[in-house]
Amino acid sequence: MWAWIWSWLLSFWKTAEEEIDPIGQEELELAEVLVDKNFEELPCHRMHVEYKAVFTQYSGFHVPMNFEGQKLVYEVLETRAHGSIYDASYKRQFLLNGKDSSKFLDALVTSDIESE
Image (cartoon, rainbow, N blue to C red):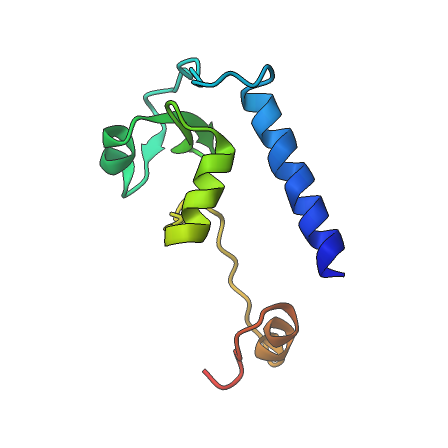
């Protein structure tokens, strides 16, 4: 089972990297992405700019797509070696309420929702 999951993840990463860098250049030069000034910035926006992020638009926000000069595989390896922080503040949030909402959530996530 894990071998299949790992194989699938590797194929996704390879595909994603090929989309960004289809000819496998040693030094990746990403085109500047045009961003609408009316979109909101994430709390970490200044830090992303400092580290030369290339932005795109998602759900009304400027979000980093990649970092200039870095391939996706390097970001994955860096995360595995040292960890990373993912700013998900722009993602949608859902409010679940009702008598059995905690039981429903317990079936979806690894945390023990009912006891919290």
